[in-house]
Image 1 (cartoon, rainbow, N blue to C red):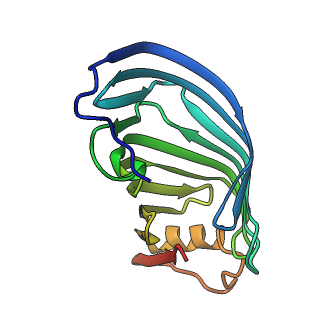
Image 2: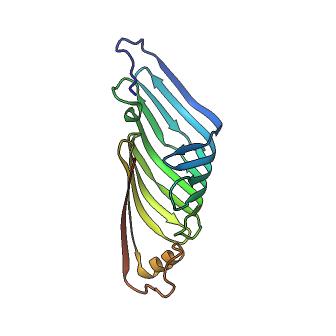
Image 3: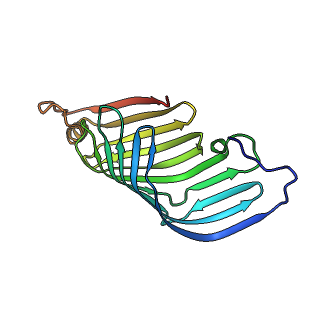
Length: 213
């Protein structure tokens, strides 16, 4: 779907220095995953005209999701109590450009995601959190930063979501071998009990790609 304004549209402008919204949102399901218990507490400023709409999320802006669960596939997975901190994230929509809305909606800024517990057959339940930056359009969005677990595991994460094709992730970490071994043993359910890493440095890299179809 495309949307644009006529070239001869009457110019207009609107400014809101600080607004606040407290919303309970309906459940949401996409690509075999279902999010329930969604709540948004948003503090923002808005600058809008007949050419562009810009929204800046202020400190205190937060999206919380009570549970995200996989609804399809043979491997169950759940994320419990997900909190997304949107402070200082900006969204800009170009109203005059051609193309579909996701291609004209740009997001940039710092993002923090905190998950109280991830449940998966391969993982020990524990808290995970991510802190980094997001940039790009809704049609081609990139997330880059650091992923941490309560076990002490830490890794660099680059996530790119292209709506028309796929979701791709690159995860890498370099840790002292002993620290890495202890962290992996506290993270993975099937980590061999007799496997110990005593010296040196451990480097791990993984790539993941999920096709939209």
